[in-house]
Image 1 (cartoon, rainbow, N blue to C red):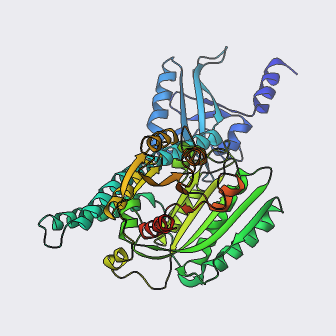
Image 2: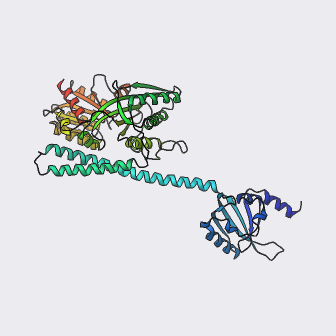
Image 3: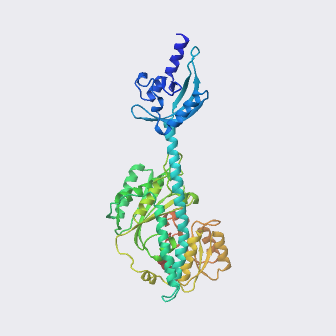
Length: 502
């Protein structure tokens, strides 16, 4: 084999496109790999024809500029698209240099092109995902932060409305504040459900049945690695829902719980009913007055820190390794529940597991009048209540509601401050209301010290976790009253009155 045929054999065997163009841009020669890229079954199909006809229209001017530059003695490179003879689009990365045969006067353009279609598509998808994540994070972040502001606005406006007589000139202003805040709350809910465009197939279904069906599917898929404990409400929880969507939402939450328990664990699922009235809505900044079915799902997994908990419903947010999660599962849950006029909360602490609470409207009777709900709230008698809770906004508004109903309130933002306030005013404090998980000292540690200092002090624990999970972690005694968050003001006031009167 002579040197020329040897070089030809090498060129024909390389997996990149090697082509020879004349200075006007028409094709003189191309190796087999190049012919395959442009979908030509033979060189004769394209020899002598302008190569830029194969180049995608949006890149032709750039390619012709490359040809002119190299024909003038320079070198150049370009990433561009071609449309093959059979219509397939490919991305090519070309490097071009001047070329002429040793014994010939003619000058050519020698171009070497690699097929970069997969890389460009992969990078394009990544850029798209990043763009969508930025958009979703921006809208969700604004909506969440604005909802926190609205919680305080609506809460204080509600308290103002309660305190003002019907004939007070300021009362219409308070009502206007509430009306405007409710419209703003609707806008934030729209942002949070961004991307949720499903068409709902609503039917009256017992939520307990959906929980049983989802649990059966999950147990089969988990293969017995996860122990499921059911504690369902004895009464039928009839809701107008899209059964398939709610079932899938529960399965998404269960899958999240399974991922949080890679070595196995327990998933506790319970259902109950809850009445929402204006005061609850004003405190938490979401919901519509009426009867709700509540589905609580608590895992015994590793839990989440506060940063993760706050971002858990954001689209594309995931704590999994790249390629192992889309970050859409809980975002879909959020959007689906919102589309049912419900809402979902998550509570978690590192090392203590996670509780998701799903609230769905029931199709039974609704509360008709806020005044009727308010009249059912038992009044305080001037007792002093110490609240220890690190969730500042909600704590302050709850304190305002307690004060509205006749209590004196002391507030602490962590366990250490709660203990200090109790030590300073132990002779006045009639009841201590403690969140289980607080900085410095947790609720149980504060409670133990308070009981040591003044035996018989009445204590109520609160938490986003369910009582059985907290008891499993030995953070709650069987004889200590417990209130699960979020709680309606009526239920809260009733419970406080019961504890004080015993």
